[in-house]
Image: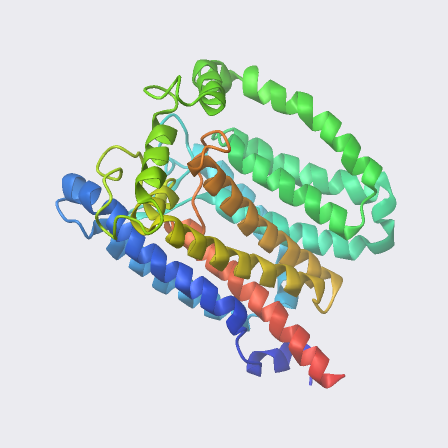
Amino acid sequence: MSTEQTSHSAPYDVQLLFPVLFLVGIGIVMVYSASSALALKKFGTEYYFVKKQAVFALLGLGALVFCRHFPYQWYRPLTYPLLVLALALLIAVHFSGYGPPAGGAQRWLHLGKLSFQPSEFARFALIVFLAYSLDKKGPRLKEFSIGFVPHVFVFTTLAVCILWQPDFGSVVILGAITWLMMFIGGVRCRHLLASLLVVAPVAYYFLFNAGYRKTRIINFVKRILSFLDPLKYSNDAAYQIKHSFYAFGSGGTWGVGIGKGRQKLFYLPEPHTDFIFSVIGEELGLLGVLIIIVLYVLVLAKGVQIARHAPDMFSTLMATGLTAALGLQVCINMGVCLGLLPTKGLALPFLSYGGTSLLLNMASIGILMNISAARRTQARSQ
């Protein structure tokens, strides 16, 4: 009997499943706490966001279970359809009429009451493509035209579409994942190091000279200056960081209690999405923050372990990409909330309000669990 077939009957990896379920459960509670006042003011009911988040969580759990039993090998023939679909969705944001601009950007597709962020799906499609292509090319990865150019071309194509929205932060995450997966896959280090030298002036261009950035350059400079000196710009560009600091500072060791935080009361922007970690810091204190960090460490450590012991190179690369994507989101979101990184709107996996992020991140966990099950089945059969 093949590994594909027997992995269905393997038990769930509880070392990965339980931390994720705890995070999702904490997320539902904290989304309600962080959003109730805002929801009551905007929609007339304090349960508006938490009800949607609970539905997202149930759908995410379904996605996790489905991907846990969907053999990871079956993603190979789906590689190019997923990539084409991702590109089509990114283009549809601008040309379909279902992607109205919001806040100076076009990042969402709206289909009735449903909203979807194509850049999240593009990240998953890129990971599958890189895992498939790097595994397929094998020893020829050392050749520049085989191991480097095609993968960078695909990344660049997706990156241009995302920059068009614009969403420079998502491009940075895609670039980091691409670079890491090529490194793990066996692309020559000199090619990867040279790419960093090329990326620097390109990044400079998009930051300072691209058309959509010209109109926003003052705001961008203010963000950098507020990151370097938040107190000086506390009433302007550093307003978010100032209130994030207030939240962590007032939380102390034990927190002020769930539902009793003050910074979420129209002081801290987007308290249920980008800055939910700050609300956790205020209401659950240092203890709550440490619990969240430990849960993430358990998830990421298990992801690394699965990648290291995966049955084949394709699954190793997929597990690496999925784990790196989760880790980057966690580090960037927490870094922003703690003032360690410039402000960037990015969800905290499993905790922040948002359907696209929660669904795809839980699906990623399901894929990791499928790879883990295949490894354990293979080990028993040897």
